[in-house]
Image 1 (cartoon, chains in turn purple, brown):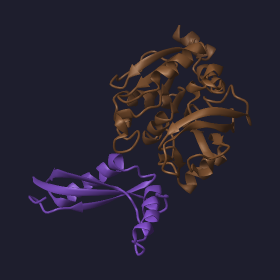
Image 2: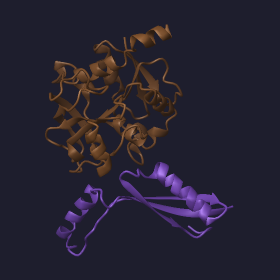
Image 3: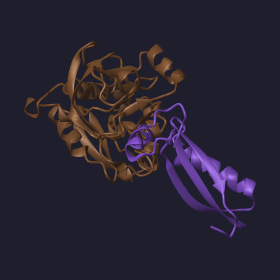
Image 4: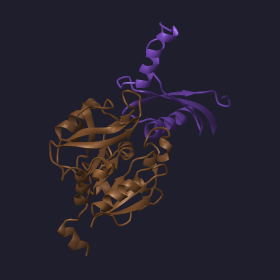
Length: 87
Length: 230
């Protein structure tokens, strides 16, 4: 068994309006940040998974994302694995 | 008399309003704690508003895994009438009993006001005693009430006449002005407005009465079933 650090980023799907992102983006020019565009606001969820291999861990995390961490109707998950034993 | 299980999650806050309104209309409300594995002997179920499990992760995301939800799903799949109000609607979508999802309001504001909704069909457990085309004044209280779904799902809802309530003046950005939908079997209904807070003129509106009366009527067992169970 290896312990894998995992980062799951949950974002609204590209075709779903993101009112938080739009509001942040609209506020930026007033602060002088004219060159920023495409703001999307999401969630970052960090945890560790014990699994025999990275593919096994990935399968488990994908299932976790599908069933619980995201609502697939409106959200996507981006899964990033850290270095085992690292953070 | 229709016995209605009103499910109480940690963070629910409308269960007593719902129970009061149902009792006023002649129903027999029974509060059911979310940790129960059985609904007990009930004819209908309401998932009331509030902030089940603190709305952590997403509204309804954790509530759908509460022990009682297996019994709610079983009751719904057997054709039993189930209504989710506000947070209860969010729980029903997360549990897959209703399609789509409720996301943050278009204006990013928590909405607390009274809105007008139109009854689009009387073919549902929530609208059978209402009048098609009637406009109802009902309170809303939500941050995540912006109904959204895929174009395919929307086409299906329209094609099967499953949008049961529409906003006259869309307050939250919901697709197609949707305020409430029902399941293919028309026994599971979800809506963002609060009919239980509009069941007496002293509250400013009694327009919620026909909706809850519909639920009570839907919960009355058919004569054949009564004979079988007696």
